[in-house]
Structures are given as structure tokens and as C-alpha cells.
Amino acid sequence: MRKGALKKKQRQLEELHLDRREALGELVLGMFVQGNWDDSLLARGAAEVSEVENELKGLAAGDAPARPEPDSAEHDFPATGEYTAEHGLPTGEYTAEHDYPATGEHTVEHSLPSSAEITLPPAGDKPTEPAAPDAVPKVAPTPEAAKPAEPAAPKAVPGPVPPSATASPAPAPSTPAAPAPARPASPTPTAEPAKPGGAAKDAGAVKSGDPAKPADTKPADPSQQSATATPATPPKPKSPLEQLSERLEASESHARTGAEAAKAAVAADSKTELSAIAREIETDRKQLAEALKGAAAAISSSEEKARQAEARLARESAANRESAAEWVRNQAAEIEADAALAAEMTGPGTGSQAVPPPGATETSPDAVTAARIASLEADLAAEKAAKAEVITNAEARLKTIEENTRKAEERVAAAEKTAAGAANAEPAGKTGSPKESAAAEAEAREAAVNWLRGQIGALRQELTKDSSSSATSAETASTDKTEPTDPGKAGS
Amino acid sequence: MGLFSRGGQSGRERKAMKDHLDELDELRRNSLSELGEMTVTMAGQGSFDRRGLSEKATEVVSIDREADLIARGLEEGLTLEELEDLARQEDEPGTDPGK
Image (cartoon, rainbow over all chains, first blue to last red; front, side, top):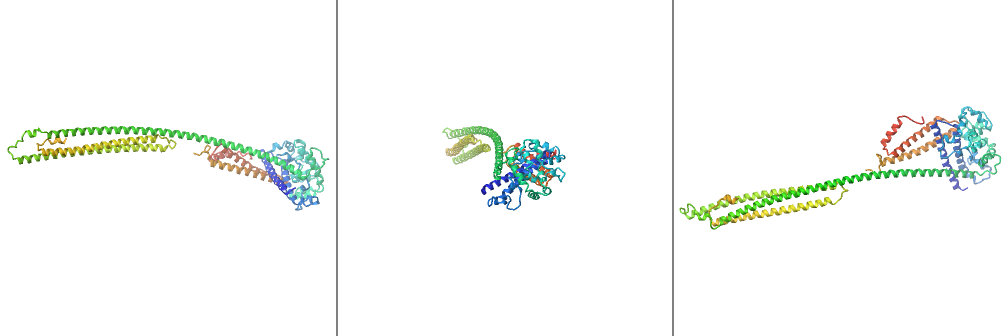
């Protein structure tokens, strides 16, 4: 066999060894949980594990010497020189452990259809145990003492095992054979010292039992492989490697089923994970929808606010316009009155000229002229004062209008800010309505401001025109040298 | 808003639980293997020390219980605090199947 194949088999054996150890641990765990200890079962499981272990050792040790001289007498001995029974035997092809699944899912119930029979006389079965092949007196009286030889079981078991192996489904006769591990050591006279000794001594014991065993075991193996009860006619035992490969195939199939189970478990796990993710996405979607609803409500409220701000602005601008128009009308009426008064004063048939002053005849013309000039100057001063008062009034009014305008602008700016804040608060609601409302507000505000500016300009023009006309009227009055009129009228 | 959060459990917690579950699985296998090895050794010595086996099996049972708890936490989307509370509640009755 090639080295690669040997290594592969060795690897597979190692895996099998691990699996069996775990299975044995599982078995112990099951017994512990159920509180039902079965030493014979433990011994069988341990024998199974140690068998694989021995096979592994044999494979590792027999790797090198197997090739150089396959037919030599040392063929059975590993390179290290210590002879273990497995080398010579078709190791462990049949033992009770073939009945166990290697995956370890068997617990006491599975493997113990026969356990009932085993447990029946824990103390009293000692007579039954030896009853099997040859009853050699046990050294240890305890039930555990029945097992000590079971490490040698896989090697030396051939005699008792066939019934148990073949009858694994058949409970009753086979189970007494289970504790048989003790027997193989006992039949040979040399087996007695092997019991107290550990595994090392065990090998020695086997070595001492060697002459007897190879003869025993070899015929026993084929009997297991073939079927139930043909101990006498084993035509040709399969070679150990073939048997080993068969076992490895079986373990591979076990591993395959295990892998399939693991795959199924992974699939189920991923399915649950997917469903969890889908649930999370659904809840997140709901939350998003709620957030969108809130954003839409906030947008509508901000739109409403903007509409109210627009209406207020329009109302205020209309009121301002009305008050400005009223003021302009008043000013126009006053100016008209001033103009009429001026025209009256400058008219040819004024009463001041028709009626001669009382002291005109007595006073000199210079004195009259001086008096006239003085009166005119006083008149002019009064008119100037009146005009200045009007101008200050107009300026105050202008300031008020400007103040109102500024306040309106501030309100518009505040409304714009609130609208912008509302738009920022809801990022999802990027609709054009706030922008449109802001643009409409800006346009309305611009129109109001323009209108007010026009009004202010017109008023200023009126005022300048007023002052200039009053100045000219004063000049004309001074040149006309008429009688002084009532300054209060001109001032109005 | 954790997109992949389930209940009160965060993704980080879930990952930690899964990792711990894997560790427990590995630990369980190791413990079972050690238990098997111990059994083989005892068989080689000719006597089974049930107390030793029971102690080791108790470890495995406790690992199983913890793994069950973690699996339940994963399934029900529990947070680590809730899981601790649950573990405490389960510990209170003292229902250790091995004892």
C-alpha cells in the first residue's frame, strides 16, 4: 500500500478514535444523567476505543517494517520490538462495538436492550461470568474487578465475542458475553498476572499468551465476518488491510451522515437568521413610515404658519398703505389750502390794498414801508415756522412709516426663518412648498417696500414742493408789499 | 436605530452569544473526549471510579445547560443582562440534573 494511502487511513483512524472517545464520553454522560451505571457497557465501550487506538498504533508502527520484508517472521512485530497482539491479528473487525453508532448518540437505552440481563446479578453474576469458557477464580471480588482484563478484550476476546457480536440484536445470550473481557485473560495460565498490571503489563500478558492466542483468534475473526455461527470453516480471512478499509468506509459513511446533519443544522440556523433579519427590516420600515408621517405633519404645520404670516403681512402692508394714503390726502388738502391762501393774498383786489392803513396819511411813506416790511418779515417768519413744523411732522411720520416697514421686514424674515427651520427639521419632506411660500413672501415684502419707498419719495417731493412754494409765496408777498395776513392761516 | 437589532438584543451581543456557543460546543466535545479517555484509562486499570466519572460528567452537563441557555437567548433575542437574570433564576432552584 502506498504511503499516502496509509497516511490517509491513519488520519481516518485518528478521527475514528476521536469519535469513539466522544461516543464513550456520551455514553458515560447518559449513564450519569440516568443514574444507571453499567460497567460492562463501559468496558465494552472502552475496549472499542482502545481497539481503535491499538489499530492506530499498529498502523503507525507497522508502516515501516511492513514493506521491507513482508514475509519475515518479524512481520508481526512493530519496529519498536514490543509485540502487541493486534499486529498479528486482524484487529477488532468484529466486536460488540460495531453495534454502536460511532457518533455517540447512543445512550444507555439504545445500547442496553441487553443491559437488563447484564444488571440482573451484579453481585451474583460472578458465577455466570466464569461460566462462559473456563472459570478461573477472580482475584478481585468487586464488580469493577471484573473489568480489569478488558483492555486485553479486543485482542483476546475471540472466544466469547462471537456470540455477542453476532447476536448484538439478540439480547439474552450475547450479554453474558459482554463482561467476557475478563475471560480471555483467565483461560491462559499467564493471564493471572496480567490483571493487576496496567496496559503495559497487559501487552506482556498478551505476549505470554501469544502462543495460544494466534491460534485462537485467527479462526475466530472469519467467523465474525462471515456471519453468525460458522466458527469451524473460515475459508480465507480477509487481509487486515481490507478489513481496515471496510471499517474506514463505514466510518466515512458515518462521517458523511454527520456532515449532512451538520449541513441541515446550518441551513436551519441560517433560515432562522434570515427570518430574524426580515423581522427587523419590517420593524425598521414601520419606524421609517412613522417618521415620514411625522415629517409630513410638521411640513403641513409649517406651511400653515407661512400662510398665516403671508396674510398678516398683506394685512399690515394694506393698513400701512391706507394710512400713508390718508396722510398724503391730508397733506394735499393742506397744501391746497395754502395755495388758495397764497393766491388770495397775491390777488389784485385784496382788502389790504383797498383799505388804506390807518396811519398812512399821517406817517411818512418810509415809515409805512418799514412797517410793511416788518410785518411781511414777521409773516414770513411765521410761515417759515409753520412750514418747519409741517416738515418735522412729515419727517416724524416718515420715520414711523419706515419703522413700520422695518418691522414688517423683520416679521417677514422671522416667518422665513421659521419656515426654513421647519424645512430643516424634516429632511424627508423636501417638497417645494416652503420655498414657494418663501419666494411669495419675499415678493410680497419687496412689493410692499417698493410701494412704501414710492410713497416716501412722493411725500418728500411734496414737502420740498411745499417749502419751495411757500418760499416763493413769501417772496411774492414781500415784493407785493401788501398788508400782513394772519400768520396762523399760512402756517396751517 | 439598529437595523439588525432583534428585540433588545444588539448585533454585537448576538455575535458574542454565537461565539460563546461555538466555544461551548468545542468545550463539550473536548470534555466528552476527556471523559472517554478517562473511561478507557479506568478500564485499563480494571476499575471504574464513578465519582471521577460523575464529576467529569457534571462538567459536561453544566456545559450543556449553559449552551441551552445561550441558544434560548439567541432564539428569543434576549440581551446579556436578561440572559444573566435568566441564568440566575435557573440557578436558584438548584435543579442540577447530575446531582
